[in-house]
Image 1 (cartoon, helix red, strand yellow):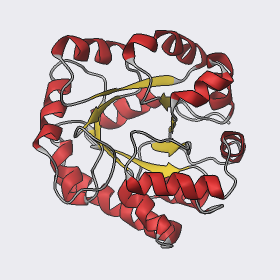
Image 2 (cartoon, rainbow, N blue to C red):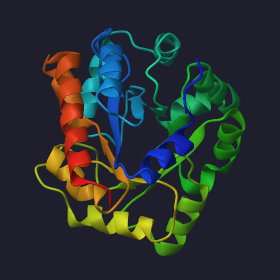
Image 3 (cartoon, one colour):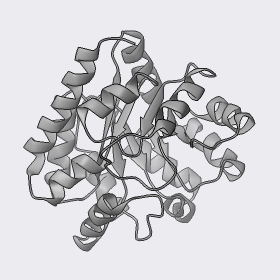
Image 4 (tube, helix red, strand yellow):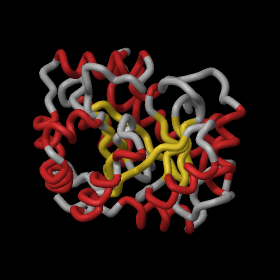
Length: 264
């Protein structure tokens, strides 16, 4: 399955004046519901979609994503099943894998990257892989056509931030707060700060995630970046039994708010 490349697609959308929206879905969650949600997200205006590979010890994930991961694992989800399911899906937007490094390490970089491409995934986020140890993975990923997306936190020093933006491909993932993922009632000041810092030093698309849950928050944060990643608020819908239609409606509301806000 051939899908659009990540960075050129996001650049084209951004340069066309639209704020970027990248929703997240936990692979395997709810049986076939995650595939239906994937399709609903794409149909509702997602520019790319992040797919979480459930892991037994998700150190960077908050309670909602942990719950989604556990439910998926208890349903018998494996990385192989997620990849096999994606081979038959054509949503027309880039797909980005979010996986802890254990999976890439156990499979080996070459096999892991090749398996992503075979399933039509063109980007990968390994949030627990330190910058000092990621160079080998970055080389292998790019060789196979997978964009290695790197993360930057509010407390990342300036010199390290320069390294991150120079090596990240696809987009740079700005972490809005120190801590785990999860929907929040208010956005932190640090979210705007990291967005502004990143935008000042790179032309690579910058997305802000961790805690973005409402259309109003998405609009506010996208003023300091090129767009947002939304995860926990959407997975809460699936966990509560609302189904793919509700997920699609939520993504549509986010898309409408971002579009109404206009170009930056």
